[in-house]
Length: 207
Image (cartoon, rainbow, N blue to C red):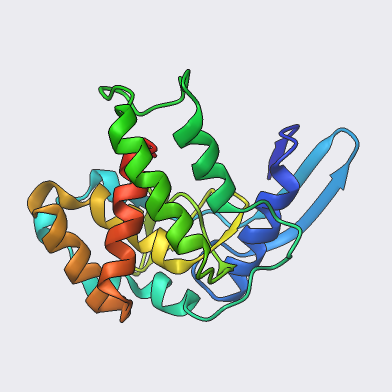
């Protein structure tokens, strides 16, 4: 059981439920939202080995990207969910952003301006659908059969190309970023150039 008073928890539960129905996230048995918070009863992924604990050189990308392939073309569970585009725009325009990954610094103004231009370009051709929103290496875990599952979604609507982009640059230690993007995009059968733009945006936003 998981309980939280996070005001975004209901949105996160909505996305988690949609992912679970596709079989790419732990099964959820109960979601209860009250004034006090949101409670979820869900299965635990065991052994739950995270992508962060896995040597990137040993990864089978077809297996790793299977959840993303299942998400292609799936609608967002609600049109009322916040937008990943708006969230990224807020990060790119926040001159005092403190929530950044350890060991990183704020991206410079020129990089952020370029990222904003790319974000606006993608927003003009919006493809809103089911989106995990945070496919970082600690939110991708393996079950006992070696299947990769997604946990802790951000609770937003977006597009699978964004999730693919975040996954690609997070596993790029053993590859160049362009190689990682190309291989992930190919495995999921996504537009390489669009995924690459999301990579540049998310890196500049210090996702």
